[in-house]
Image 1: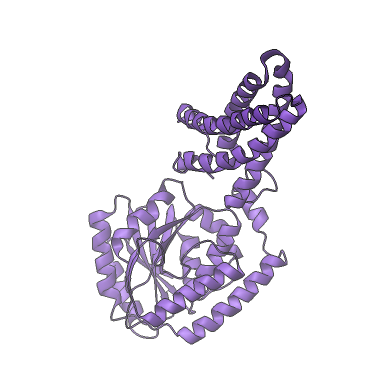
Image 2 (image 1 turned 90 degrees about the horizontal axis):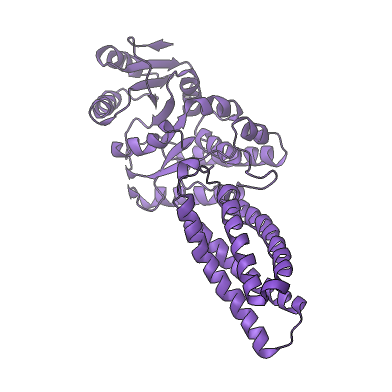
Amino acid sequence: MSTGGAIMTPTLDIVVPVYNEETDLAPSVRRLHAYLRAAMPYPARITIADNASTDGTLAVAKDLAASLDGVRVLHLDAKGRGRALRTAWTASDAAVVAYMDVDLSTDLNALLPLIAPLVSGHSDLAIGTRLGRGSRVVRGRKREFISRSYNLLLRTSLHARFSDAQCGFKAMRADVARRVLPLVQDSEWFFDTELLVIAERAGLRIHEVPVDWTDDPDSRVDIVDTARKDLLGIWRLGRALVGGRLPVDELRYSLGREPLLPGVPHGMLGQIVRFCIIGVASTLAYAVLYLMLHSTLGAQAANLVALLITAVLNTAANRAFTFGVRGSANVARHQLQGLVIFGIGLALTSGSLAALHEWVPDAAKHVELAVLIIANLVATLVRFIGLRWVFRTSDLENIR
């Protein structure tokens, strides 16, 4: 059941899931509402998702919806934070859906950095992180240890790359949420982790925002029971992924997040594989050009021309396929930086050739080529490191 006055279609819908929070609900929602009115440049709505509260929470929520514009109430007859978020997010008409804990432990100044990449279309999902560089956290050592241990467990067991699964401060593009949420089984606290793992496996871009976070000393989370359910959730999700029961490949394809080259994984491993494929093609092209030009130009000039031509083509291919930079913006700058890296490769190969001629003046053409290929392998490693630097901040909106 949803209650509240007529609200214009918002860009952002913030869900606040609550269970028996009659004391803290009104101050928190009023504070959030005031912040949105003062600092949020996008139309925003607050949805209070009441998880079958048994105290006066629902009545307080209805009073807030009646007195504040842009506040509505969604009542569920069953408990479960995951259940509340799935219901509210799926039914929302906003472009971006988010949630935060009712205690507002996260500094609200992180809200705009959280949702801006989603509104722009650059990212698919955004999370606040208490464990990232730049985060400032006030909480006890016990909770800090549990949080870090849990996220370490996710990295080792499910190969998760996100830093903080359980921070109660997340947002997602609504169109993507409607595709991903049907695959998420958990309806309680493991919901966040399962959502993030599935999103990551489907190739979605997850944006992380370091947050200022102050622990709520009155938190009602049962740590032991939650830990037990999280471990069961990790086991269930891991088995589903290994057994192929989760259609993440189909989801990746439907969302247009398939690898840039078929069969090549995402991340740095994918970059290395794509770089090597392009590198092999470039080396073959270099060898053919060198042999063709050697008789006419001589060894050093043939090396220079062959390396220059393949360097330009190699930079263009790596720009598009290894690092996923599209469009014509900054092409000249990228090629110029690529030529600087080419200069380092030229120094390595020319130096190797000069050393060979010093030690073996009568070296055959094929011996020269063998030495140059070895030198090119060293230059290739330098080139990969250099190109990662070139494209580290290049047009991120064009990278996927």
